[in-house]
Image (cartoon, rainbow, N blue to C red; front, side, top):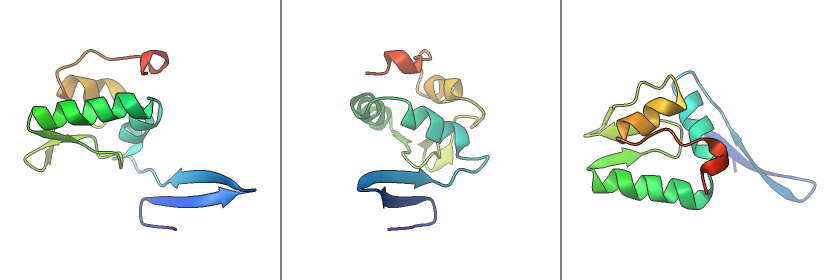
Length: 92
């Protein structure tokens, strides 16, 4: 399946997700894809509890439909959620 932002493919029988990053989505995708699924689910739940949304498509953190992280780093995503930056190796 191929869409505007991602393609779900198989290469030699192995599932591969290919994300089409832009300047706007790059850091959101980096942050989302370097944490465990459980860690990212906790971030998404935390954002919802704050009245925000944490986007899996790389579009960062929004509140009332407006992006509130600056889109320029992973740190800005954590900052938008009021959290300290968590290094990838500790995202479990």
